[in-house]
Length: 147
Image 1 (cartoon, one colour):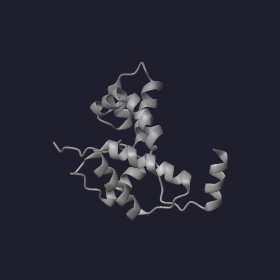
Image 2 (image 1 turned 120 degrees about the horizontal axis):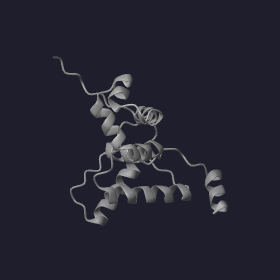
Image 3 (image 1 turned 45 degrees about the horizontal axis):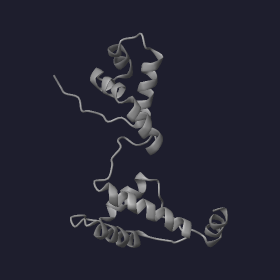
C-alpha cells in the first residue's frame, strides 16, 4: 500500500472545508472528507481548529498556509512599534537601518543570542504587513495634520 504525501492546505482552502462542514451538518464527516478528497483526520483537525483558522485567515490573508509567530516576540513587537512611529514621522528606512535597529532593541532587552538575519526582519515585516516603501514628504505632512 503506497502512502500519500501530506498536503498542507492554504487558509482559504481550510475556510472552504469549514463552509462545507457548516452546509451539511447532518452528513457524517467521513463522507464530507471523501467528497473533498481529504483524509477524515485532516478534516477533523480543521474542524477542531476552526476559530484559530478563521482568525489567522483574516489576519494573515487567505494565501498563507500556517501562522508562525516570532521566536523573540518582544523584539518583534518593539520593531513593529518603531516602524509605525517611523512611518508617522516620515522616516525612510531600508534593511540595513532595520538591522541596526533590531540589534539595538535586542541589546536593550538583554538578548545576546539573537541573530538578526535579514530573513528574520523580512518575515517580521511580512507577518505585520509592512512594506519597504518610501514615504513622501507630502504624505507625512498630511498625516501630521490629521493627528
